[in-house]
Length: 238
Image (cartoon, rainbow, N blue to C red; front, side, top):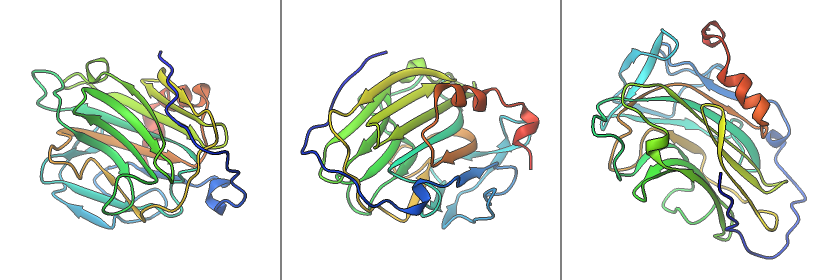
């Protein structure tokens, strides 16, 4: 595990926070032949949808170059603190992961990537990284090499946990902490986009089956992340 501090800036106290930062709201999609979330929400955009056998023996979502999947962000996720989980199985990566940018989950303002966004991406620098960018440009980034994450035809759980209150960002692979970064000073977070993307946006598709996307508005501990990883398959059914 490596540690890097990438944040610098003036000390600013966050005094007023949206109500969803403190609640127990959970976003979860089973992808069992449906795009509806556990809370009954429908995606705001859905194109090129193809259901295939999922990790839990039901139906996951195959993400290709034709797939667009977008959900409303308000009330589901928070830039202040949270944890998200996603099961991914690469398909057709016979030569292993390449250097192309592949978005796994991405939330940002429209027409900019310079302010207030949270992204989980395999990028052209040959890493899998989770990135949290604050209001004025500083950011935290935790990363690992995709060769340590992806194997063609094998399921892997990726999890990321963050908190602006403690200034921590963590990246987990199959329940193991692979990187952690901490801010020298508090992050300053402002408004962002109203929707987030799963497995889309970039020129290169994820080319993977995804299943059981879970987003909490609480920064989970390693024990909680391991508990999610070890859930029996029956726990993922409707």
